[in-house]
Image 1 (cartoon, rainbow, N blue to C red):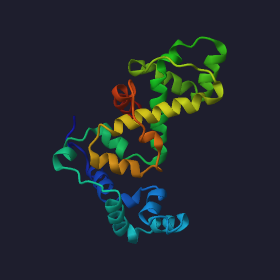
Image 2: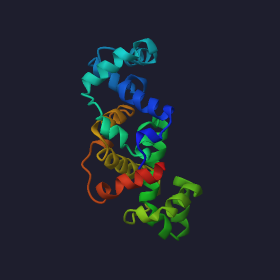
Image 3: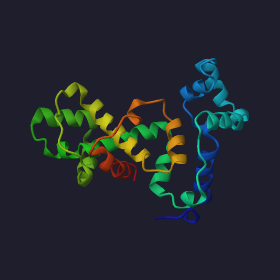
Image 4: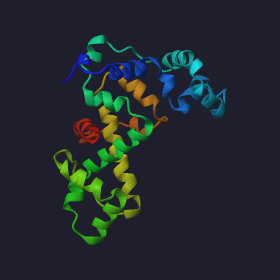
Length: 210
């Protein structure tokens, strides 16, 4: 595991900004909550886009969501993959969730030989992602039903978000609370996790992001 001193200045600055300036990345829905919806979405978007207000809005978010400080020791010991996930933007987080879902479904992907089912998987994920998932089959969950085909991608994605929820529970609270601000409020990150997601999920997400 790398310590903070082994990262470049850009890495350290990125983490420091993540910890100190949540207004730089918070989803607008969280800003609306800070004002109890007294200020509309478009106005909140304009506020978040104004760099001059970033410090004040960050303080507001920190107070509203009770964002904890990160202990210096935890910051130094932060795993580089966890750091990378935490600093991902919302689009990349969605891609990590999809890749995690594909890994979780890897036993299903590898064991599917029927033409229609194999075609449905490749249509939902594409061949490259299927190959990536199978290559990481050591972390896969149990086999799933491919049908109904029309919900296949959504079910894979939902399992990826469950893996991401499990990852969130393993990182320091200072990372977890701020990471969740990047995404709109989501039941997928709040639901109770059952086996095997709680056990497999964190490793699946780290593999997906690595």
